[in-house]
Length: 296
Image 1 (tube, rainbow, N blue to C red):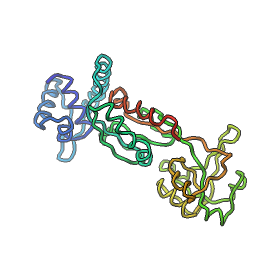
Image 2 (cartoon, rainbow, N blue to C red):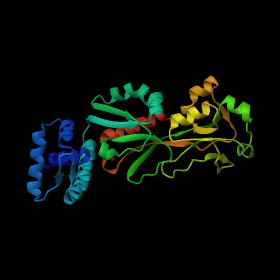
Image 3 (cartoon, rainbow, N blue to C red):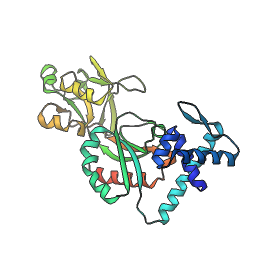
Image 4 (cartoon, helix red, strand yellow):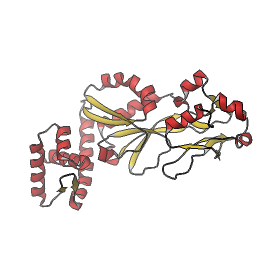
């Protein structure tokens, strides 16, 4: 076993916090993984991992060594991909925003797998910002203005937003035609998990951003409940158009103030700094950019 392979084993153990999980993912016997770490610690003359009955964690020396390892392994992978004509292979773990996954990504996925038959995809769905390294995820697709300096973000799309309400709500409260009229209405407010305050409605007026926070009897913290509240006539909401396309087609929701467009929302792929050169992640991001071209 060469030193790069030992580094790869060590890095996987740190990321998964488990010898057993690392061995399964690397498709090696657990004894092989254990012996590789013993040889590595002996050669370096220091203890790299603290082992308990419940978790494995790097020591201070282990954390420093891990940070160097991931950069060296990324550089090696990039160098080999430059000089090798072989297509990327191996397991790619991704986590996708659910509605975009159903509407855009999954229908196009057969073409990606046909282009890269050596890649095996493991797909999860969610809206939260996961701990990619700890949870063993290579990249996530998220919508919105994300603030996380520890992640690399590549924008794959800018999604049209709409301001909507139900016909029942408009029958009771009237249809606003201006921002001044809108200010006298109610909203279903979406609460920011970071600030615990509602996100304002946003509009582009003569190229300038205008924000408006409306009162409302109901506040939510989830996208599905947000849309459901609008459909139930509880108030006005502002969402990416793709999320309410079916409701707009059926008449369950109506677009308001079409002459005052909200700013588009970015859809971005995020991945750890240490994996920004991964050939599997790179081709997946490039493919997402292709399938989102012209969407939303």
